Length: 263
Image 1 (spheres, rainbow, N blue to C red):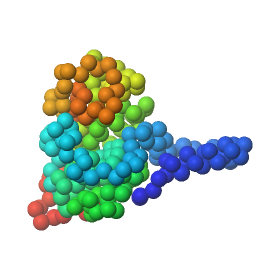
Image 2 (image 1 turned 90 degrees about the horizontal axis):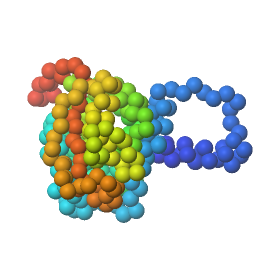
Image 3 (image 1 turned 120 degrees about the vertical axis):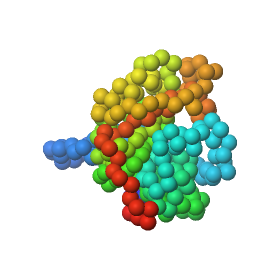
Image 4 (image 1 turned 90 degrees about the vertical axis):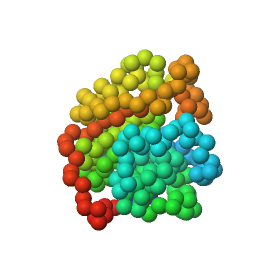
């Protein structure tokens, strides 16, 4: 699963253009997986291509603003769970989730950068055996994921419908989704210049797609944010919403303590 399909697809498109756009006379029918892959390729900027490989020591200072453990508590992530880190980037949350769920859990990292691959190869993650890199959310096993988090990446989906379809397929009944986004400063709207959204816009999109709105946490609020800029390099300190949604249905009964989730 550790491939760079979006990059290869782009290179193929460029090659065809250089050859006068030659290709099959008829376009193959687009599948749901193709649509999702295209959407994920369009949002690839969320996975930063880090020139320097980060380490946990480099990231500790970010914890005060990002409050990852409180975020995980709010979403309901526990030891032994299966979690997908959407737009994982260089692995800030992936690293912490790996520790959180432990050897009996699984962390699927989607939208990862070369930095996360390098950290895994370097042996930075003590629980690296529970991390699975996936190039598309369509690769997630059906009815296998307990929780998903999208930290400052949801706004990049121009059409989130394919994201919702993938989450509905992968989440277990009662599974949860935690969404962190920069606040727009008004209830509704989507501004790609500042990369901010209104809370009601996010809530309405999720609920209209069939998710249940569970609630909101204020732990990431910043009243000093004027909501007028991108906050380059300080987005983990901006005024952010933290919303929680759930896949309809009752969670399955817990397995016996001796059982181990198959990754």
